[in-house]
Each structure stands twice: as C-alpha cells, then as structure tokens.
Length: 261
Image (cartoon, rainbow, N blue to C red; front, side, top):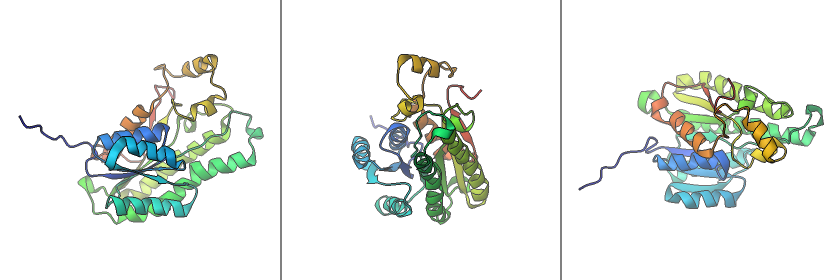
C-alpha cells in the first residue's frame, strides 16, 4: 500500500517570523513548518530561536535579529532568499509592552521601546520586504506575497493602564489596512491578527502580577473562558497566509474568544 503525500497548505512557501523564539511566534513557526513551509525563526534571543528551529528540523533556520535595526532586517530577509531560495511571507510578530500603570507614569524609555519594537520595526521591515515581494512572479490569483502583522485586541478595545501599548497596536491595525490598500495592485496582501492575551512570556507583563485572582478577573472578560494559545495563533496565521485566503487583505482578525464583542 503506497502512502499518498497530501501537500500542506503552505507547501513550497518560505516565511520569515520575527519573535519566532517564543509564544505566538513559536506557534506560528511550528504550524507553518507542519503545513509545508520553510521558515526563518528570527528572534533577539538567539538561543530561543535555535531551540525552536531544532525542534522543527531542516525546514527551519534560526537567526538573531533585533527588529529595531534596519541592517538586521535586511540580513534576515537576505537569509531567507539565500538559504531557501525565495521569500513569500513575512510575519511581523515581535512585540513588547510596558507594565500596567497610569499612562502618565510610563517612562519615556519604555515609550520609546514600544514605538521602536511595535511600530518602527514594521516600517523598517516593510521598507525592506516590499520591493522583494513586488519582484516575485505572481502565484495563484496573482498574489506575490503576504505580510502578517501581530496587532492585538488592545488596539480594538483598550484596557486601562496599558495605554501606550494599546495605542501602538491601534497603529499596527491602521498600518495594516493602509498598506493593504496600497499594495493590493501589486498582488501583495497585508493582514493582521488581534489576539487576546495568551499563555506567552508577555502574559505576566499584561497582568502586572500572575495570581489566581488576577487570572480569574482577566478570564472573566473572555466569553470562551480561556487565554489564547500559540496553536490558536498558528492556525489563524496559516489560513491568512495561505492561498485559501487569496481574496483577503486588510483584515485584522480577532483571535480572542469573543472579548471584543
């Protein structure tokens, strides 16, 4: 009896995922490889990226990348094209937050870091990736490439005491929509995911402290009653970056158990 190979939903695609060493980014890398993609796991923590890539095998390659540095982003995209011979998908997933506090108490250093990682990094990455995607031959339905940004429910329905983080994610949502409409004539789709807080290294930062009481209060605002997981985000990202979603652009899809309703 011969086994038939069912091609994955991302078969033949090459993706770059920033913040791929942990949390949602690691979940996205795992799902992408499972569905046939080759992936550059980019993270500022090289060991974390190496660990993820080791688990995923030869289809994954780890790279230390500081997304706030234009030169690092150029090297990252070059690495995909040199090692895997092409580039189809960029996932701008790396992100930071400030601790929950009154908006006037957030330090200028924390604010600048949020702007650099959550906002400027996307500008720098788009400046570098768009010419490369425009140069791709058109694939199914004329699509040349996909950019997926990690936004947040915080950009749709902000919580108090995370003011400047909320604002940065609102910027990501508007940037996604603006870029989508500009790049559509070139066959480049731009989409985003709006996760609710998940079981990732950032969870404790969002909550301020991780106690059963704080968790219960947080969960009470999510109708489906649980945090989002890296698998949830991987599944959603896989769909949005696949050819199945070739008519979808500018969408910022909530993966939030109903929190934004």
